[in-house]
Length: 287
Ligand SMILES: C[S@@+](CC[C@H](N)C(=O)[O-])C[C@H]1O[C@@H](n2cnc3c(N)ncnc32)[C@H](O)[C@@H]1O
Image 1 (cartoon, protein in one colour):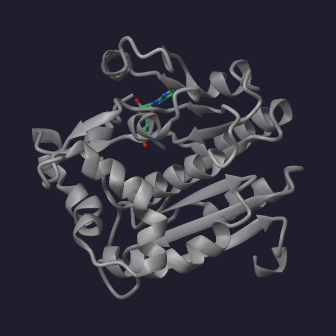
Image 2 (cartoon, protein in one colour; image 1 turned 90 degrees about the horizontal axis):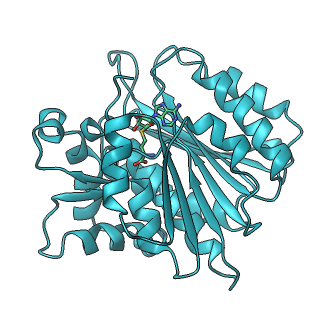
């Protein structure tokens, strides 16, 4: 396990993932009933962007750095507000030093009766995460293989929840594990909202991944993708995608309204693109 998220915290892929996660949490809170967020690959929770590691790649400058400084249209400003407000709250002096990973962002948004379960397999990262939430009765951090949590920790006892699956894609069969993990989890907890992250870069088999997902017997799956540059020259990440199972019914429209602004802000060349399509369900003909 070589992957350390500190090198990538706040990059363009984190921006899309965390903005959508924050929206999903806000939607859950439209009902008074408690819910649980299960974060299967949680990382360390809080990132110091002034650290040597974050400075070395500087990826956050092309991600949250750009978005935080941007002028946004009203629909985009409203879409990104829960996420950007959390980032601003962590940086009360107006700069950008601290960046919330998914568990920290989620925790900042939870109501006193909502719960967070966070899994992290890297021992150092799991320890750092446990320290961050020490004494917090709403949060449980476990040093555990997140793929196992998709079985053992579902359904949550609240019977309402969001499951974020954000693996590092260090090993070859991560797409297969995502499909298999979702399939197992959905059998145990079919009313949950799932958010699966995946990379977009040259030679990454996203179409095959989508086909495998479509073959699962899951009726509502929305896919959102954004690329920030062409993959002709680049060998690394050029974009990222999210598959959202059981999305809130307004999410697609909101993404349609907000993503043109995000693309404008994050674009690194003229080939930046975005799309929001149903893989299964609703107006499936747009796939
Ligand atoms: C992309 S990072 C997570 C970032 C985090 N979700 C966020 O948005 O802030 C992936 C994390 O998964 C951890 N990891 C790798 N394999 C794992 C596994 N099988 N179970 C749980 N965590 C794992 C890595 O150590 C890394 O911290």
